[in-house]
Image (cartoon, rainbow, N blue to C red; front, side, top):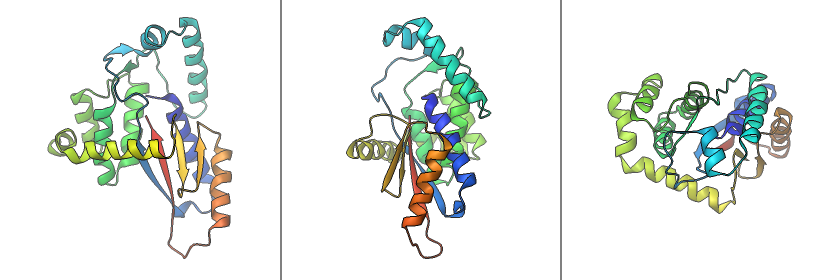
Length: 216
C-alpha cells in the first residue's frame, strides 16, 4: 500500500532495461509490513492519514497529487480517491505462494494495480481469488496460501530478516547482500548500483546478481 514502492518498482525496471548485464539479474521480492498490527479495515486512505495519522487533509491531497503526477510519467494510474487501507498479511501470503510458483513479480504487479488503480481491498478473499486466477493458480492453490502455515512462516521470515538488516521504511532494495538502495530512487541510481556491482564482481558465466525488493 506504499505508493513509493510502486514508483520504485518502475524505476528499478527502467534501470534493468538499460543495464548491459540484464540477463544476469534475478529479482526476489521480500514481504514487509510497515504496521503488521494494522486493524483498520475499509477506511479510505485520505481518512486514515487525516484521522489516524493526524495529517491535514489539504496536505494529504497535495501529496496525493504529487504522487499521481509522478506515476503518470511512468504509466502508472493512482486513484487515491478509491484506495482503502487494510492489513496486507493475506496479500503477502498469496505473494509467498506466487514466489514458490515463480510468479512473485507478477503477483506484486497485480496487487499494486488492484490497490492503487482499481481501489480494491487486497485483503478481501474474492480479490485474492481473482488475483490467483490471473496468476494461473487454481482456487485450491490460492486458498492454500491462507490455510497452509508455510506461507505465514515465509512472511514472518521476511519480516525478521528485514529487521535484522535494519529496514525501517520501504521500498528497500538489497543487491547481492552487499549494497542497498532505499526509497523510490531514480532509475539512474539503480543503474549505477548494478554497474558498480558488475564491475566489482568477476562471476563465472551463468552466475547472477540477486536483488531483493522489500515492499509493503
